Image (cartoon, rainbow, N blue to C red; front, side, top):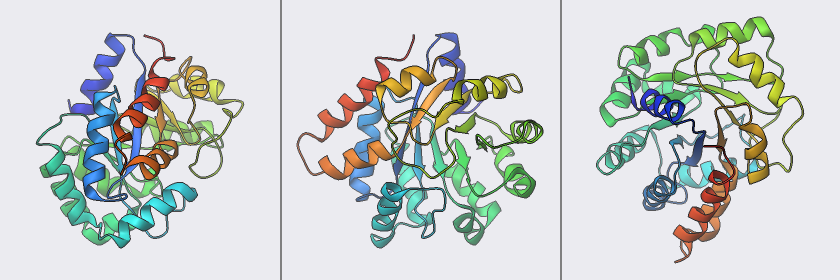
Length: 265
């Protein structure tokens, strides 16, 4: 049982909902990434997704695209990423997940990627542009090392395909709440509750909802059915605005607490 599974088991036992945070690794610099992880953990985030920057992030909106561009210009690559995770593991045991497109993984080498992921202390992998049919090699390498491969389900995924996706997944299922790219939205798309319920009938894995989630109201609505929320772009915006300010910890912590307060315990 890896850290994701341990956390999910603890949340279920304690009847809590998960708050998952996405940040772009190396944005705007490595020091800030390390500081942000500490702040997020101290304020109740349960799992942290570290985005591996890529030049063509087809699933990401303007906020994360911008953050990825900055991180790449600053020299972020897979070697630096794994060094970063290794450094984080010296001070934290929070579950850490890499969100990477397949190109950087393929170029790095699938087996080598899995080996370094395990060595550095990663717990899970999300590859938004890699469908289950093409993920067999990566999935086998990850599972052999106790690392979860997390797959995405969207509002337009057919029921039969959902069965196939969740059967290949481990750790949790990532439900994409909208048809589009990442980015904060004002409302939760209609149909999310029913779609999450349908997924949960097909799997015992927790189902976490991301893409477009940014407000306490959205979080409260989503976790009536889902097992937790995933927030990214709103956090990136706070990092960009306050990372060099003495208010950084206060502002980021307050935002996370605003989400946590409305989720049932």
